[in-house]
Length: 201
Image (cartoon, rainbow, N blue to C red; front, side, top):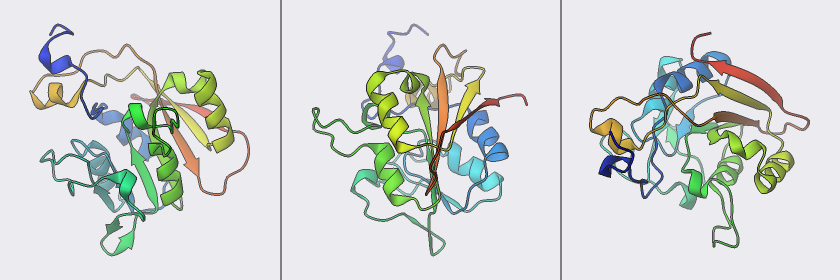
């Protein structure tokens, strides 16, 4: 479809869907302490992959999208982790809305999505983020002080079209942007490790 078609317009809530293999491969390589919470679950791709990997998991979203998520939940208003079968989620894994992923005081966003996840989770936080976070001056400085444990480089480039494209039954094409999964471990101090997360190991 033409990129200027209605389905390809920017989603007002930054709802973009990662390919299924991203979460499946993450849970194959990165170990978490559950339960796992995806606070912007969209089509429930990440919670389904977590369940398939043997974790207790829950998905919520700001918008009720009808894919089995507990909805609607405003993640940034949450004061404590979601409960999963009576236990608080210990790890947060998600593909966040990039527009509010990092705090921006000048834009009136003093609390970023990533920082809020770091405040709530007591084990690990894993976020799908644009690779430009590593070389943009402001974001790279924030990343450095936040001390991530590991950076997974997604290869090949995953396609992440607006959710409306997938909901309409269209298949994503080849990706043309670079993405990472950045993992933080509570209490970790030191340099981060960079590894490749390949669709076909």
